[in-house]
Length: 86
Length: 393
Image 1 (cartoon, rainbow over the protein chains, first blue to last red):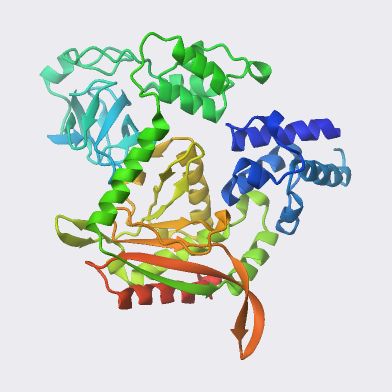
Image 2 (cartoon, each protein chain N blue to C red; image 1 turned 120 degrees about the horizontal axis):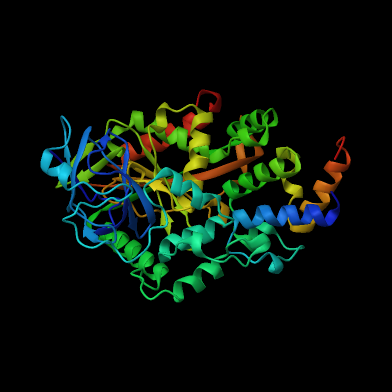
């Protein structure tokens, strides 16, 4: 998957978590939690859905890296680059 | 003959609208079966029946709004339906006896039959749009989707609703929810003499233990620290049972089972606090999975009546909003509420040394007719003590 595909996958998951939000209006540099008012349960659901879609199990110690949309995509790109047959 | 009445799905509920019957006259029912779907201010609730028997007669039609306690159906507690009931049974696929008033003009989004419901769920429609469709009485199966890949969006549902000639859903639902909450909270403040206690709990051991546990688990099995707090509250209630009670007709009624209500904020505004049944008897893993399911269903507007009516105490957590202390307003007829603030790092004295520690402020709001500060203090001390041994929760 290329960067844009990963970005779209993340946005698709965010649409499920915050259906009232307009994906086009998400600022990629601003905290997702602040923009979308997502709490720890929403965040856990977000991670579970990303794992399902992209086969990336994100450890707790890395949660702090997933602050905004760009940071999520960068992280997922790096993780997937290190996985076989991705 | 057992009577099935409109249940009280929360202290702030005075009436509900029957959306649809999930059974037919002549069907056998067992305690816990879903018999109806009822629309309330908090969303659509699946209502359970609490007696075994056979449905004798429906007395209310879908679309009708009835007050709490109004008779809705009769259930014969032994044997098949009477000959009279069978002759007035609904036709196949229907749910109304012949003598019922005309069916509601609002089409049912979630019909009683499982196959039809699954068909609706297979449509490309977001949870939010599906929820809106139910609120506005729009059948998504006949809506043209304009979203990605033909998905049905909220805008599609709104446009479909405005093109319909009739709808019996009030325009401003958020305002109605707000009014309902206002009524309940005003009543609470008027009738319940609240007292408030708070304690600050060292969460170091609990959070370290949780980190170790979660490091070994795939993401779908990880535990949030809120689950630890709920379990500690449930165990503490075993030690201070007078906080696990309701105030009814001038008396305190202690509850044998502990069903902790979990305050869930709705994305569209408003708050619902459904019960995690038998919280003290769940393993931590079970509690976490059930809490996750409960929160997700609450936000999707898909709760059961027992989840709305059964909480024996409520826990509300505002830590993620940056709040350090929560002084909650008790949700009647409950007699206590626990507030959890945000975890902060503070200078803390451990073995005569000052060290940084992650701590949280937990508060108790309690009904002074039922308990005094001493017992409230015992409860908070128990919560603190239990959180120092998270492996035992």
